[in-house]
Image (tube, rainbow, N blue to C red; front, side, top):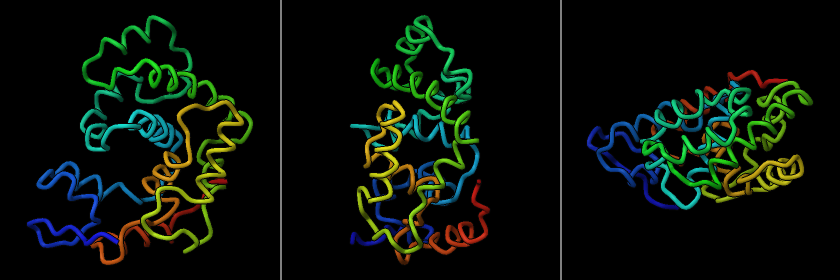
Length: 203
């Protein structure tokens, strides 16, 4: 396991925070968002999309562009994004604020339509995703994928989703609190665990 990162405030954090030393925005994401459970469909869809855009890039790059992504993709309201057409693809490809990758842009629009279908069938994206929450303490720390993320990836692909490989889905599970993957000794592990313990799983 990598040693913890110790920034100037003296609070130990997960080693991956060292990728952006001194970046308060990056640390705030780790401290306040990463690993905290989420039940909001729009936030979950946003994260699914952004994890797809991150493929081959750093999360810091995507995080710094997140506001621009939100503006470009109608706040990640998947009902609206599902209605995007060729003119929107052209607009997005011309937007310097986001990652201008045609395949990823078209996949996000395609996945929005799949999300509308999934919500109609399953009740909500949150209820669907949280069914894949692994049993407590069943996922070893610092993996790049897990049986749970493999199962989620397989099911989403069966439903026609794109850019949802098991590594991408594991990153989603880490970020959205389906597992608490803060390193042992990270100052924010306990807070994330309290949030998970108090979280009412969507059904």
